[in-house]
Image 1 (cartoon, rainbow, N blue to C red):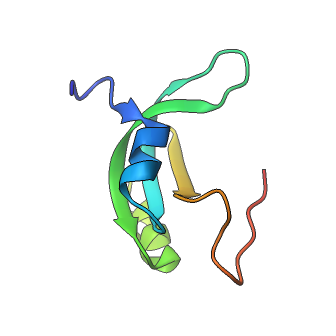
Image 2 (image 1 turned 135 degrees about the vertical axis):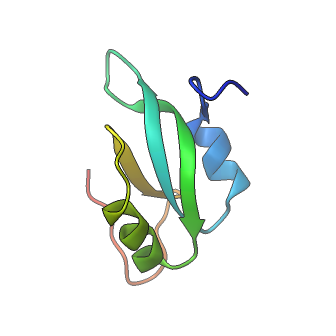
Length: 79
């Protein structure tokens, strides 16, 4: 994997099941602005650990997401 191209976001999500992810987005779909590729910066089962890492991260387009389509009980996802 070349560091500039990263990995497909969906591949990262599949690799880290039931975890929160912090991804540096490197490629967006031009038509929908959906993140397509990125570099994983952090992953954790604890969402707060991801937000703590986000505060110390200097990337142009950070993405915080959950690896599954449905968030854990007690959480909601807004678009």
